[in-house]
Image (cartoon, rainbow, N blue to C red):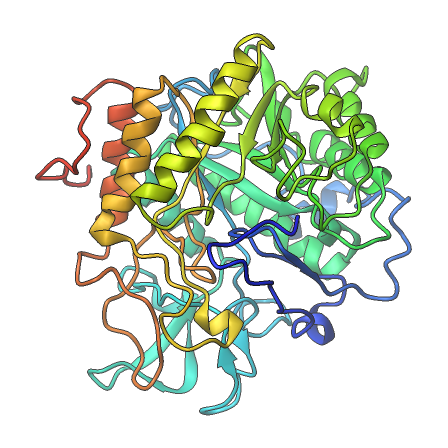
Length: 471
């Protein structure tokens, strides 16, 4: 998907995780440009991705089988209508978290005192995390002299805390980003399955909803069998479809299939059609309400979309589409252009097709540390939340009822909405919330959700004061 970022820069990051992670795959959400780190052993794609484990192994594999702990049902899990759902990466690790991935996705070489470099552009506010869920970055200090610490999403505590924030600030739930290519690596499969189990538990405990976002970013050896086998594993062994907090729409489990039809991905139209037919019509594993995470130029087969005519038919096979336009504009003029050329034109097209529509909202962007560019060069200003709020105001005016927020915890590209620190490690560059409270974008997202549902008046400007978190 060589889609355009605002200044049309190509994403150059590639294999700094390869040595540590094997068949790990990195996707740039903001531009869709992908760098692949694939192990040579990535030949098992046609096999069942993850065989079922015995009941005796359940204690070490909490994702197996249905969830059976405390639950609540604050948010209606039977419909996508009126929902604002955040993408959730959950891809961060730290030394000592029970994996061997070091500071994966935070940076490379950070285990060395004053060594390595960061690949995130925001520093999380970790003041509410349990001490046992944090790891000090060697040699790094905050302005008050205290050690700088980071969390691992492999540990349950941080994920449960994130779900607690969702409830407190009125966020409906998440699409859990799952890089299907990782299911072929036992070590990475253990990470993504653990995050799934923790997130599922958090959604039960806090009354949120969740659904799978199956990311098809993978190398040239990608096969439809790997994707289908991973979904079979999720159905047979994890029992996602039977989970009471798993989002359904019109009686069908919701799946967001992200990555078909992009120029920088190897999938053919025939493979796309095969996958869509599987998820929608397979006698045992079909019956899904399938959302396509696709290029905004899907109607015209221009931009980052593949140009082959057969893709036009494939795109229209989805039950709903979610055009990935994060990073396509940086100001009001650009937003108005996307409104006319994408959102309004899409709505006119799908009206006659009976398809649903789930556009993307994003609060801003920055990936200077990831790209090794001068501080501020790639920044798309948040304008103290006005940039983000205006998107929701437009969506409401267009009658849009469901929105995907990209993302909850994406600090690599500066699109996070969760709690981010204004006091950052000494001597390092990070984007902050411009002095706003750490929870400002959580409050903003909750208020935007209420506006989208008609629970508060429509406003082009951020309403003040924003609601306080529920307890």
